[in-house]
Image 1 (cartoon, rainbow, N blue to C red):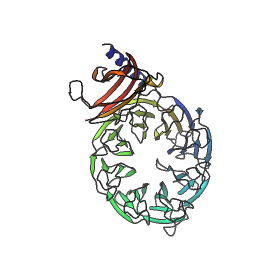
Image 2 (image 1 turned 30 degrees about the horizontal axis):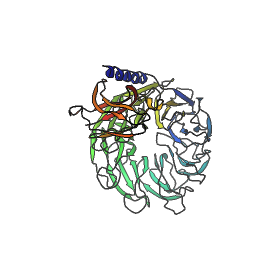
Image 3 (image 1 turned 180 degrees about the horizontal axis):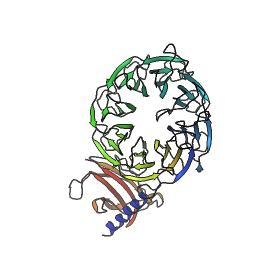
Image 4 (image 1 turned 135 degrees about the horizontal axis):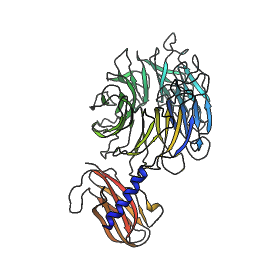
Length: 540
């Protein structure tokens, strides 16, 4: 009975923590709607990462719309630099959650630079210095060719090709356009000069660098093509010359794409796009075939996760266009692993590193009701949720490295600016770990027992726990179910100080009965004192 009460008390403590909203680390109001966010390495030398966002949508013209904010700000975000890159008809900003990405170091200053795709009256692809925000080069579709004569187009997305095609020691950059100019371009990473262009004859909404698909030694490109002039499809293009390698018809609007592991054995990672068609597709990265597809509501955004169900393959989180939910699907076969309802539609979703101390990444989601959610990556349960003060829609969200200095990952989210709103959208930085269901680790403050994470975790057949006692004594290691009852005694023995121990668990109870899938808790005691806990996830 004492053991049950002890573990139940521990579980109650974790549950109480889950009810606490996260700490707001800082906020910053932009000049327009917050379109896209990316984290960057330490700009100002304070030892922590920083944050850059594009905030142009529905905002006033003629003002700066790209901002770098000190990650370790407090209260109001501290501006490290801001920029209004000049180009196009009116130097307009970006549109959508693919318009800003961290690129390679293009100017040899030892710091990665930024890739900014602009729409509206900008219609220009930019490389910006990550340190200062200054423009390194631009490709203005109002004046550059092809097509000939020039025809401007909204630039929706950019990416680092990752291969130096021109031989100047700098990797090239790819970007894609829509709205009149319907080309996908590859340009020289050092100066923006044209390398090749592919005419899609309809809008491209996302483009990503892929592995070398055609074995020519150069990374290739995959892109979301099609709006209304050609059938919507995912296409693969040669990174060397833009030749089409394959296409996969989808049949409805495509918004972004992500990569999962190779599940077909050809050595090329598979692709999962988000589409308004009520089917989620996995596409073979080598040839465009469809290894699996599953019925699901129209999707707005997909994000690759680590393996959350223990089958060895990356899984996929999905946010929806007109459905109030976030779901995670198996990368191996498309099976739905979990479904978590939200207050409104979920256009913003991302992976975040482990906040719940189970060794598995988690998921962050933003919805149209203005709420931010941290969801357990294994179960989908709500770790915490937070509503922004204005209640504006969350349009972009990122799980980022530790901003606050507590060693745990954090969350950055941005809101829409409505035309009726006189001020800009807001960026919010939230403490990811605080208020989570992370299992308290007394070993951090009472060093008598150091209990490492189980590996693998989640697991199907067997997992191993490693621990060390810092003083000699009688050690017990117990496995407890969600109700706090002991289901397995893993060890009961005298342990010498400093003696490393490895304990294996096969997912069975004392007596050999196979236990159901779920969350279990490891509890270590030394001389009867409860000293360390870990969470283990069993999948079937």
